[in-house]
Length: 225
Image 1 (cartoon, rainbow, N blue to C red):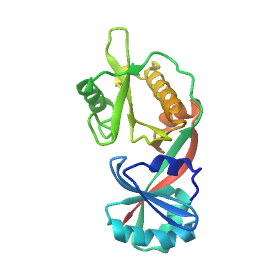
Image 2 (tube, one colour):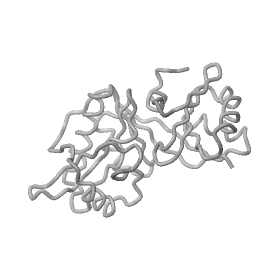
Image 3 (cartoon, rainbow, N blue to C red):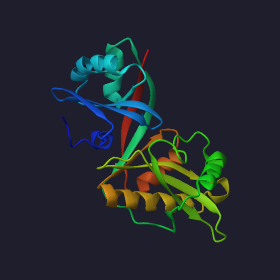
C-alpha cells in the first residue's frame, strides 16, 4: 500500500475499512465530505480488479474518489461506473504564516449557520454535522462574524479544512485569508499536514490556497450505476 500518499493518510481512520490488492488500495470511509466514500490509490489495472468486489461488498452508496486519470481509466473499463465531477485536492505540510486575526469559536453554531446561508448555502460542512469538529472565525472591529472555516473530516495524520466562507460584506477585506491561514496553521501543527477539496470553478479560492503554500492534485469522483 502506498502509505506515503497523503490522500490515503487522510482516508485511514478508525471508522474506515481498508482493502488491498498488490499495490492497489481502497479505503471505505462512511460520512466523508457529506457522503460515504471509497478512496482509491494505486495502478488503475490493479484497482480494476479490486474495486468491483469491494463495491459488491459495500453497496452502491459508496462513491469512489481518486486521481482523475485513474478514475477515468476505471470508468472506461467498467460500464457500471460513471464519472461525477473533477475537483482539486490541495495539500501542504508547511504551516503558513498566519495573517490577520482569527480564532476558534466557542459555540456560535447559529452565527456560523447564518453566515453559511448568506455566503455558501451548499457547504457540505455545517455546524453539528457528521465529522465537523470545530469552527474558526474572523470578525470586524464591531465583533461581527465575517468569515468562517471548519476543522472537519480530519484524520490523525492529515487535518482537513472545509466550510470556508466569507460574508459578502467582508469580501476583498482579508477576512477569508485570516481564517484560512489560521486554520491551516493549526491543522499542520496538530496533524503534520493539512488538505482540502475545492471545486475547480472556485478560482479565487484556489488562488488563495495556493498563495498559502498548498499544492494541487486533480481528483475525480465516480458513482456506481
